[in-house]
Image (cartoon, helix red, strand yellow):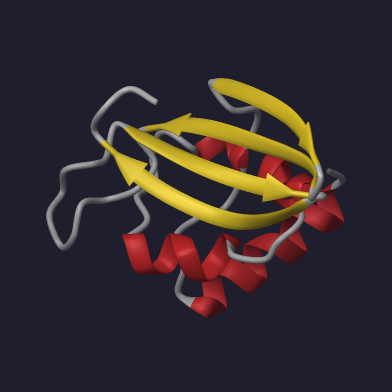
Length: 108
């Protein structure tokens, strides 16, 4: 992403109250469950990867609905109002767009 694009994303996220700035800061930010769902629901797979970087794990399936991908990220989302994080966040992408988001402490 070029400098202007990063700056634009920074401004949007700063003024929307979300602490996500770039994939480079994935280890230093914490999003609440609500903020994470609000930020990524319905977004494109490209948007998710630009914002969060490459996932720890990817599984891909083809079925009657089309292409289904599951992206697994580690330690991104805060548990409730605590400072603890879920170990895993799984993002389900159907035909290029986020359809499901799940958080768990169990290995996917």
